[in-house]
Image (tube, rainbow, N blue to C red; front, side, top):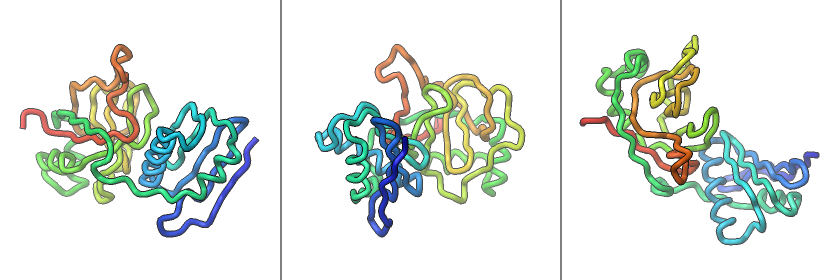
Length: 220
C-alpha cells in the first residue's frame, strides 16, 4: 500500500512529496543530494527531540529519506511535507580525516580530464570537505558528495572485476572508498590503509551518513 502527501515546493520549502509505504513506513522524496542530506539531519534532530514519536530506522539515499517503524505513517507524511528544512551548515557533523596515497591506476586519466597535473589531483581532492550522503553497495561503503561539478568524472566504460580494498574512487558527483575487494566501475585515484568496516568496532562503519570527510595526502 502506498499513499502520497505533497505540497508545492518553494524557496526554503520542505519536501515536495512523502509516500506512505506499507503499514509503518514513510518515504520522503526531495530534489537534490543536498536536500536529502539536510532532511536526514532534520529527521534525526526531531527524533532526538521526541517530536516524531517512535521511528525505528532512518535511512537516507540519493534523493530520499526512509522512516521505518512509525506509528501513524499517514499523519507523519502530512506533517513532514509541511516542514521547512534548513540547509546543512558546512561545519555540521563529525569530521573524519583519511590519509591517502595518490597512486591509483586512473590518476592520469582523471588529471587529464580535469586539465591539471597529476600531482594537483591531491590538491583538488584535499581542498574539499566531503559529506557522507548515504551508504550502500557494500558494508562500510559511503557515497560522498561535495566535489565541484567541473570535477565530476564519468564511470569507466569497462568496470574492473576486482578493485582492491582501500581504493579511493570517483564517479559523477560521488567519491568513495572501497571497504573490501569487489568489482567496480569508478575511477581509482588513490589508496588508504583506513579500515572502513570492522564489525568488532563500535560503530562498525567509519563513514556514517552526515559524517564530513577530508582526504589528506599521506606523507605530505
